[in-house]
Length: 340
Image 1 (tube, one colour):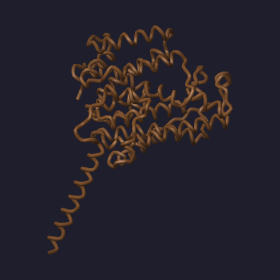
Image 2 (image 1 turned 45 degrees about the vertical axis):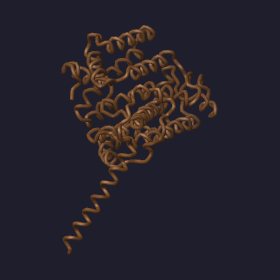
Image 3 (image 1 turned 90 degrees about the vertical axis):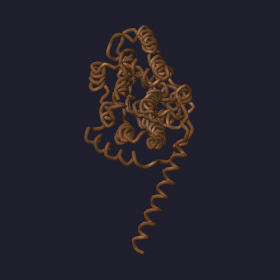
C-alpha cells in the first residue's frame, strides 16, 4: 500500500536518493512487501536528508533549526515543497507515527553537531536510541506492529545496527575528529581519546575495545531476532535479512582482527544474498528472548508509540503451539482410523 496522498513521483525521488546513498537499506527493502517498502522508503529518505544536512552542511546550527522547522511543518500537514518532505508528511499522518520518534533522531544529530562524546556505554546507548532505535520503532509501526514487546525488539535492532556502524568506522570517525567509543572503555584500555584523534592508529588495545562493542551489538542482535517472529509474515524475511547483513559487518571487523582504523569492513553482494537466504529460517522459527525488558535508553521511544494488543506475543506463541499439537493429534487419529 502506498502512503495515502503520496505522489508516485515523490516516492521515486526518495528511492533514487536511497539507491545512491543507503545501499544496505535499499537492498534489504527489496525483500519487504510494497505496502511497507513505500512508507519505509519515505521515512529513510527523510532520515538520510537530515543526516546529510548536519554532516555535509557548513552551519550545523542553522541546519538543525531548518530540520526542526521542516519537521514541524510536516506534522502540521504543510510540508516543505520537495519530494522527501511531502512523502514523509503523508507517511507519518497515514501511520500515526508519534513526532517523538523523528524528533529523537534530530536530537541525536544535534549531539553529532555538538561533537558530543560518551563517557560510558549507557551514554552511548542514549545516543544510539535516538539515531537508530527511533528508526527501528518507526519501521515496526509501518509494518502494523505497535505492542510494547515487539517495539522493544525493533529498537534493539536499530541500536545494534548503530553499534555495528560505530565499530566499523572507528578510523574514519577519528580522522573526522569524532570518537563514539565509550571514554571509560578507552581509559581502561590505556588509550587517550585525544591521542586517537590526533593520530588514528590501530593497536591491540583498541581492537579489544572494538571487540567489546561488537559483543554488546551481538547480544542485541540476539534479542532482536526473537521479535522477528511477531512481525507480519510478509515482513519477516526482509527484517531478518537486514539483521543478518548488519551483524555481518561486525563479523568482517572481527575477521580483520578488530582493525577498523586502517581498513573498512564491507559485506559483499554475494555474501548479502547468502545471508538473505539464511533469513528465511529466522522468519519461520521463533527465537528465545522476546520477553526481555526494553533497554532503558529506548523506553521513551515506546511511551508514545505502543498500543497493546488484546493478545500479547507470548500468548500468541502458546496459542500457535496448542494448534500445532491439536493438528498433530488429529493427524495421528486419522492414521489410526486408516489402519483399522
